[in-house]
Length: 179
Image 1 (cartoon, one colour):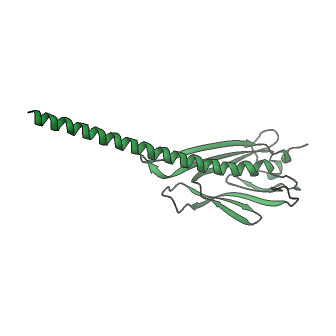
Image 2 (cartoon, one colour):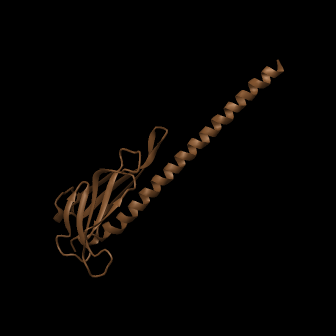
Image 3 (cartoon, one colour):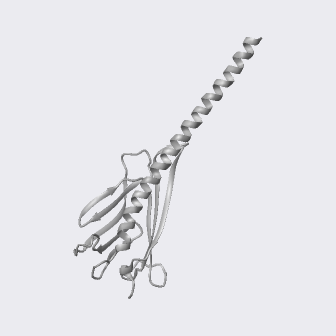
């Protein structure tokens, strides 16, 4: 009888240890995917934070040459070297091939014809434009501020879902304001 009880207790103890081990492993995976996603989001947001406040810097009109919900093209002297650059941001429908996530697409940043593909798990890149009275506008000549929304997701699923991180910022570029 003692042998049966001991075997039963050992079995329960072994199952408990295995369950704990699986939970720790799953928690570690989710934490890793969360960190990857937040890092990707932060890296992409850093590039946006560099470009968007400089829209129109040292440039003649039109400072914004096109403005759509998922793309923008503008002029700016990005590196303050006296040369006006042509910059565009475009959220494409090109899926990222290196991930299992079917929702992440390519975000392109082009400066003077040289495109950098940001494969950072972007699932949403949306811009909303406002005029000087804070009314939405799509007319590039009337844009005074731009709200940028960015969502990134993990490249792999954890618990049958993708880990996501969101970022949003309203830009009021000095060079677009009526002085």
